[in-house]
Image 1 (cartoon, rainbow, N blue to C red):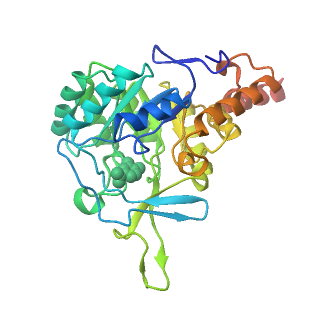
Image 2: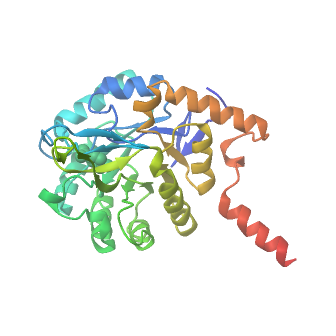
Length: 316
Ligand code: DHB
């Protein structure tokens, strides 16, 4: 274990701050295990729903300048089958695992939580922000502080593990939503989910590239938006934040940490740099830390503290 990268998240030791986010190679135990073996400090399962879902018709993924558009449609084997993969993962890997779940009512979130309570999950993530199922379920729950509050409160009343609320960038003001999640008892936040949704057009066929027309945008083009939201939220809340959105390299990960994130998601970069991206980013973070004489992740300055100190120095 590289001591420079070791950290603690809600009382659980992780060997790297890098997290495989929901939706990336994580439908099966082997995908999560490959990420863990390649240096992810923590892995997240695909968002599981109560029943299996086939997801949207293809094409469900399209590349564009600076990113990837996807409209998977929450394809997943359902919570029972999904948790069998998580059990398999736990038998083979010690890396902490977050189980992500998606529902549209408190009652369904509670039922999902009961399943996850009987699993080896270390953390429960509430996907309140999938942008790809508007047609079926309407605007994501994460657009409403009231709904975020009641769902987090309901889940927290029974969850036997820490609860992470995954928020959306697709809202005019994320702060009341982040505060609602914290006040309702969320142990941590994960942000951001994909942006948009967006659209691409096949100009020769004169039709949308994605069968479903619209899809959530991820990848490097997202990073400035993610950094701004993570910074704003981290200035407001006391709970830790998993920062995700467009991280491709070690210096991007450092930006996330400086914005205030405790851990850093690496998702779309897996498709761009390959699964070795985790060990590569770990190395790149360590090189930067050595250059700057940071002995551990906590010594990497937070932008907020740095700016506060500059204001203080100017006043003196
Ligand atoms: C899907 C869900 C998400 O939350 C997301 O950000 C992207 C895709 C999906 O399965 O459609």
